[in-house]
Image (cartoon, rainbow, N blue to C red):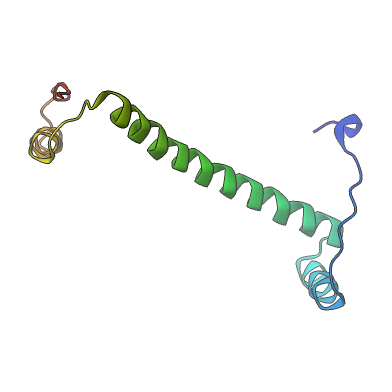
Length: 96
């Protein structure tokens, strides 16, 4: 992150949270600013992963609803069992 890309942002927090952040920052030998930035970064990273996972489930569902292509549970189980045994095999063909 370059210094030019850093912009101050104000947030409103209650006195209790402010005190807890200050106490934790002192215990970690960090500044309150560092602690809040770290917390926000971790939150954003986690929520982006959750959203990507959500999209990874929505997109195939929408594709299935549009075209009806699918594999049966039995076909998927057979394919996964082969992979588990170390047998390289192509995934089953989708069907309507």
